[in-house]
Image 1: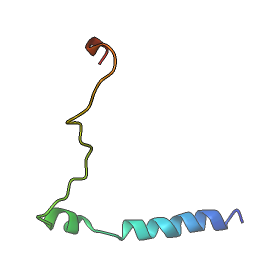
Image 2: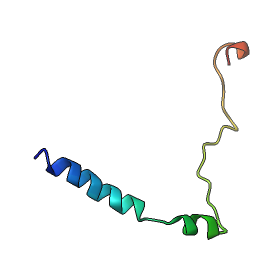
Image 3: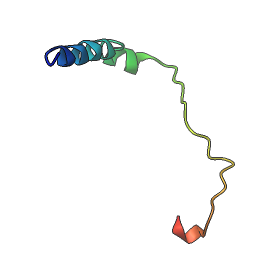
Length: 50
């Protein structure tokens, strides 16, 4: 079991590393930004704390 766990971790990581290449990242002209919208945030407390 001790030898199986590192093998499974490396096996899983190999799939993650092969998902895309650097060429795919830099040649694609469309990007999708999935960010957090802070437009209607309400802060609690004194503004000087932030």
